[in-house]
Amino acid sequence: MSAATFSGLPLHAWRAAVVVAVFGGWTAVSLADPNMRTVFGDPLLVLAQVKDWIYDGSIFRHLGLTVIEAMLGFVAGSVGGIAVGFLFLFVPALRNLFDPFLAVLAVVPRIVLAPIFMIWFGLGIVSKAALVTLIVFFIVYFNVEAGLRSVQGVLVERARLMGANGLALMREIYLPASLVWLLSSLKVSVGFAFLGAIVAEYLGATAGIGSLIAVAQSQNDPNAVMAGLFAVFLVVVPLDQVLTRIERKTVAWRG
Image (tube, rainbow, N blue to C red; front, side, top):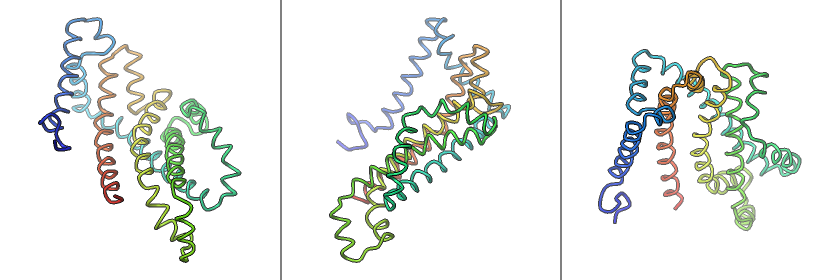
């Protein structure tokens, strides 16, 4: 049986069937029990809400702002996590100094820092991007550190005996060893980046998907809430697919 098939049918056909089944079951439940519509919404009304937002253009403004906040924090957190991971590798004294502080910060739920960032940076893009940066940083840093620690010491010693310097070790040994860990962390971080941006907007913002959801909740409108989440899926899923393809190619290259 091919890896691209399941029980003789293409995987994309099964995936489409799952989506249809979920929406079909959702529609059936909402039609059978009107009370459920006040909790989960009506899928037809959710799609109608998305269509209205597209026609009046408001969804592009809100979604665009959320994407900017998430991507700014995603890039900054990823670069910071990678840089600190490699810095601690080559300067162990810094790792010994800061490791206890990072361990303490890592166990603190980053979401609870959102109000503090809003006080420091205001309700604009900066406070949301700062929160996302902190969320992504720890995900990337700990994965990069794990990838670097997976390198066998004997391999490094042999490379040093052959005259390899720090740059050569990074390029030929450490970077390839940590690449899969890094890509896996980036794949996970995309979802958390949008989660952080949306939660921060929900807590305090004048625009963005989180703000849109907060307004819908205050109006007891589950259809608008679900429509906001659906709009995020339309962005996150393609990004996840791109990172998945890159990760698979990287694994094949290393293999």
